[in-house]
Amino acid sequence: MSDTTAQSGFSELTPDVLLEAVEGALAVRLTALAHPLTSYINRVYEVAAGDGTRYIAKFYRPGRWTAAAIEQEHAFVVECAAEEIPVVSPLRLSHGGTRGEAGGISFAVYPKRAGRPFEPIDDEDWRRLGRVTARVHVVGGRRPAADRVRLWPQHSTAADIRHLLDGGFVTARHRRTFADLGRAILDVIIPVFEGCEAIRIHGDCHPGNLLERPGEGLMVIDFDDMAMGPPVQDLWMLLPERLPDAARQMRLILEGYEDFREFDDRTLRLIEPLRIMRILYFLAWCSRQTGDPVFSRNFPDWGNDAFWGRQIADLTEQLDVIRRGRPA
Image (tube, rainbow, N blue to C red; front, top):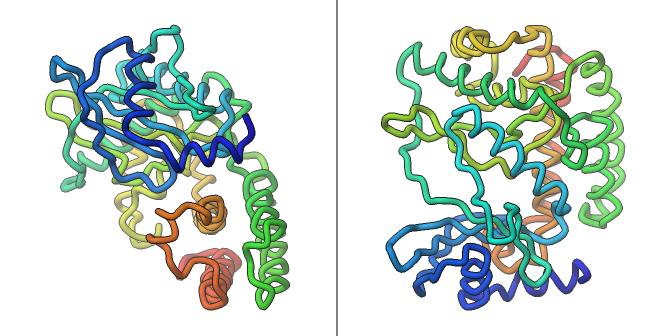
């Protein structure tokens, strides 16, 4: 089945279609509940079995990940669970694997797990963040994930820039400026990554993806952006401010982190380059959804001349921060 056909099916994913797919995958009779949950890129629903058991069904946007990439995400989460790291593992489906397919659309089913958003209050809370992240990285360092994004300038960032230009997403007025800026960004940040390690990481480890569960501690959720990248990527987004203004919090995070895994302090220099890479990644992420009505409603001004003017200004400012070697 072509990506175009699968995309059409994704847009037309109805409760009847998804319930039938999940019922078959779980070999469990479901009720009529199919409650949509907030997710900009995938389709995520809460469903329920007749005995009251709740599940979360996640249907992956076609064209974003290959089947192998999805399975490597699942394998990483399952490995973390085996080490008693609080994560939500995909369920084994009736065919024995964790990835199902309906009309060319990959999906997974998870047990519903609740928790409250984690807000660090004292020093020990910051150390806890470091410990749970390090435990994930201990597992992540055991083997590579060849089919996941390699979060490295000459790989993922160069590809994001090419995608935005080749796909015609940058308006004609700003195309040359954006292309020149993209080359300048790569020239500056590629050397910074030389000699750094790349392991399996969460990839999107911001506070919203950490929940507090009584009796279990911190739960790490949503491995959808799992990548091969530098460990510091999973630390800098936990900070409330840029590094100089959050040096104390980073010190505490690293104290907890090094209870389980060594950290190369030299990789703190990657934080500002990773910040500009994230901006470009987000732009490419959005561009892949521009035909989706849900995206258009949420981002009505995405892609016009004014939008690209703002993005170029933000990227230029961040590049200046990197060149100066210190945050603004």
